[in-house]
Amino acid sequence: MSDNLNQNLANGISGQRVLITAGAGGIGLAIAERLALHGAKLFVCDVSDDALDAFGERFPEAGRIKADVSRDEDVEEMFKAVGDKLGGLDALVNNAGIAGPTGGVDEISPADWRRCIEVCLTGQFLCAHHAVPMLKKSGGGSIVSMSSAAGKFGYAFRTPYASAKFGIIGFTESLAKELGPFNIRVNAIRPGIVEGERMFGVIRARAAQVGVSYEEMEKEYLSKISLRRMVTQQDIAAMVAFLLSDAGANISGQSISIDGNLETL
Image 1 (cartoon, one colour):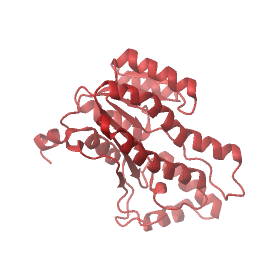
Image 2 (cartoon, helix red, strand yellow; image 1 turned 180 degrees about the vertical axis):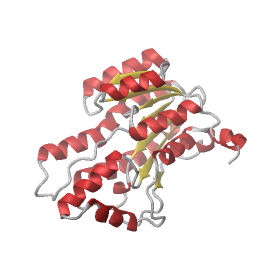
Image 3 (tube, rainbow, N blue to C red; image 1 turned 90 degrees about the vertical axis):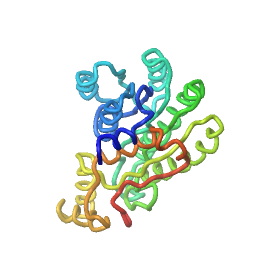
Image 4 (cartoon, helix red, strand yellow; image 1 turned 90 degrees about the horizontal axis):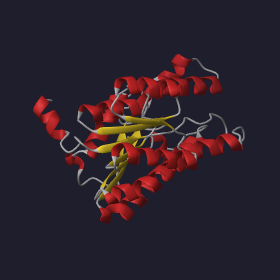
């Protein structure tokens, strides 16, 4: 892809005020890097002090705050800080989430179930609850919510996570209808198997749960992908940038899979 074509696909991002939850590491950091490259004004939250400190060293002009998106008071404080730092908001990337427990429905504790739902689903509601008035004031904007391939397929032994990610699809489609008249686009991304420590940990946990080696379990995971490879964090970041750009101006209410054609889980 030529530099000119790549830049054209990023038109409209420069100057956008963007909040990325869990933006100091992993997929969130990849998204921040991509949007910064295209001139966005960033604000991130994270639960890791070390990650936030490292982010601040790389992006000294960006806003950052420690926040757990499942906590009402943390989210309220975060949006006050966003308003003070950015003066408004043009896009929310609802990226924060946790893997949740691995186990049978009779083995997972109610506390672990609730924690997964609270972070992965309720956290997205809380952030949208505060972001929407700011987006309306800006005359429109975009919300991109991170779902998962687990929001498309049933996922044995990962029921809290799959339930939350299915919920995000319903939340996205409902918000798209609700907010379209205000020029606010709402989309979800369903990453497949994304290479990185989080996914490696999921594979390790599943391998231990069924009593096989990590290598055997990884091979089983990849056998379900038509392209036989994991996707990268940068693949996800590129789609977020597309959805926030002028090229994505008429895309709303969609759940877009970035997964190498994952056939099943």
